[in-house]
Figure 1 (cartoon, rainbow, N blue to C red):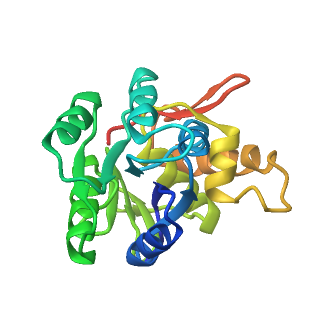
Figure 2: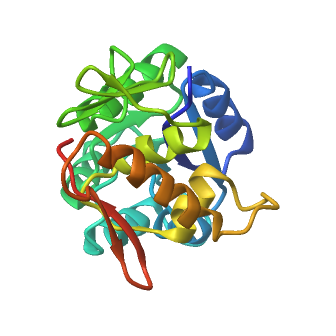
Length: 228
């Protein structure tokens, strides 16, 4: 199954962070940050489907990170972790905009259940392994894209690009965000490759759909105007 889910783990305990990565490896790509300051920068610089956020962190606390993200209108799902089972901490976290809470130590099964529930609620994780937008359907299992009954002719990166756009419908994605997600910053490919793939994707969509679902935001990036 193609990994379309992207999770940011902001946790200073390396063992706990690595364990979470191993728990979700079958369905998600993870980025790790080990202090609040770097975690906030990472959350601001890329788009994630879920952030797992510890409260007690070096630099900025989890509360500070969450407060800043919500002030910036970042609506990413946030699962907070705490070593203390105190109602006041939980209430404060929810007041700041947390989506769920889990107390350490936690069982693998409970963490996975909470993660999957949040991802399903946001539409990032689908039970049937499909992503849809209007007439467009992407099957993540066999990596086939269709418009109605017509099969789109997309190569691997074009499929990944369309999936990323649909998952972030009506959200402006910068070229840097797209490049990091699809190719990775360690890729030797130039970021200008995005324009080529975007052009190919538009041409294929135009064969079956009227209008331009992918809009270019000059000097910024792109936005997919579709139905989630």
